[in-house]
Image (tube, rainbow, N blue to C red):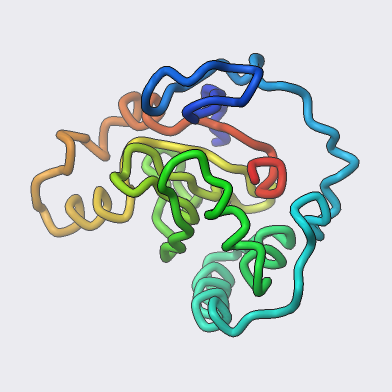
Amino acid sequence: MSINFAASWCGSDLGGHRSPSGGYVRSSYDSLPPLDTRLFQGTFEWLGGSTGISARNAGELRTLTEQLDRRGLSLPADFLAFYASENLPDALEDNAPTSCWSSLSEPIPSPVEPGAFLVRFFRDQQDCVLWYLYLRPGSPAFVVHSHLEYGYEYEAHVSGGAFRGDSDIDDREEQLAALQYCAATFEEWA
């Protein structure tokens, strides 16, 4: 069973395309300015390109890759190139419109699709919005966003604890509303 997610962009503004309204807003995906997808070759040249391989995320990426391999899933090449780079993760954080940072999670089971997993990679400082790779067997990864930190939500659910923010991870409709598609690839999202 493949899920079709509602699509939106979650952000604070888009320069001349959208005025800031104070905080994050989910905007219609159709309202985004067009991107020149010819630029997206997995090298991030449009962001200055990589200045070399970094040991900073190497262990984390290796562990994450192994965890996904056991589930028959893999990280997309553009994501690996970005997070293995010495400079690219900082370039994204330095240019984030709010205080956001890279934060890689372990694979988290999708609350809406058996066999699919989320990998959190970027978060707002107050967890107002978090971005995840959405990985499903036999399909390309894409990016979703949510106001829920699914690592915490899943952990609370498994342990029988209270749900953060009164979210019911078993309520499929609630989770479908909380997870929104925002980009076909990681590089497109970046």
